[in-house]
Length: 306
Image 1 (cartoon, one colour):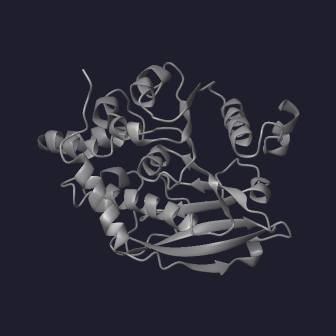
Image 2: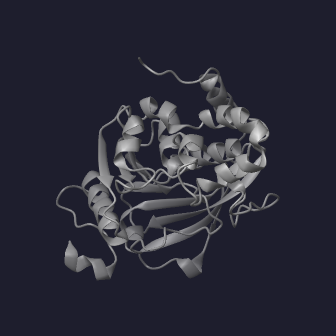
């Protein structure tokens, strides 16, 4: 039996698209000399999302006349906002246009709303309209909409890197050509939250222990974000970074999602090593974005293992 998205799924997301369409991006970019070098420039960028809500992002552009591939580091579930993710080789900024966006509530995008961590994922779950993730999803899409306006970006090589939000934006915007994702909380959220006491999924089970009468309503709200229903709309080449076989989001569990992704999928089961998992991802991205003969861009202490 073929599963169908919940009633109202299409109209829910069409409404977010419509809201974004009626709000100008209104981008402002300011050069940050202290974080720029002779090889790349860094800009602090302000853009507007639904609300309206003003967001902040870091845009890094190599100093070249070439049109380059781009990496969009989607908003994450955490307060700290970085230019590139911790542990990423700084040299990535020499070869890619990168854009890292802080969604509403994160540091640098925390006025007037400053999120709590933990707490953000269940903020406003009383209704679909008040749930903060509606705005975060819109923020994620708006970040991509800004990035594709940049003349430095090769529109045939745009990757989204991050958590569940990388899949959401790829499902809603076909301009994403590649995805590297490590799902953490938006696939069958409530079902999987009962299997762990670890954050971020445990935030949902904690919430329902406090508000058991809202269980049915919360399930309905979260189903709009469930990656199960977004997968068929993803046409990008996708690397899914799964937990190991004992983890909550191991390959067997995530198969119910990634097997329905329309584009080509590579699944990598965690080797329980940030080095091994990270090296696999960097090799995959390099081959896809820079070509099979290019050398993966990794930290210096990893280079001996390429």
